[in-house]
Length: 192
Ligand SMILES: Nc1nc2c(c(=O)[nH]1)N[C@H]1C(S)=C(S)[C@@H](COP(=O)(O)O)O[C@H]1N2
Ligand SMILES: [Mo]
Image (cartoon, rainbow, N blue to C red; front, side, top):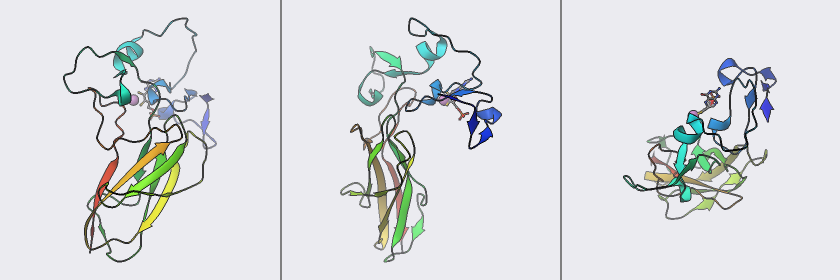
């Protein structure tokens, strides 16, 4: 898609005025700002950005071990799912024994959000959060859950699964540029 406005206003200069490509589900490298012309190629683009800059290992979750060689590299492409806390931050104090709202946002990457699960015991057990309105498969989706903290530290984790079955990894994937990192986010709360 070609975008010429955002929230009813012309695109801000920093976001690509006057025209910007929107490539839903794919990484921002493809969302060309200040779009001037479109050229159709009969071969893969060999410019710097496509052939050198934004390459990922052609492995599951673009994951390799540090120092691994002989890996086939391909241009970065589809986005992977991620989820975030929005009302709580790491090391925050909360009230013990009282209902605590936990909420945030998630996206599925190149597919919709099927599930957002929350763990309040460091990842041992998970419960599905209540999902907010579905604005379409490329949109953020709000999620919310409630828990009653016991006195002491509590490790909260959040994990999204998309409708294609892709799920955030419990351990971070690794590649030289840090591309596609979507490890489960974790925060520690202190309840007293
Ligand atoms: N014309 C132009 N468009 C571009 C880029 C660029 O260097 N030039 N960078 C891309 C990359 S890598 C990113 S992350 C996004 C950043 O978009 P934003 O400024 O709206 O956050 O723009 C994309 N579009
Ligand atoms: Mo970028």
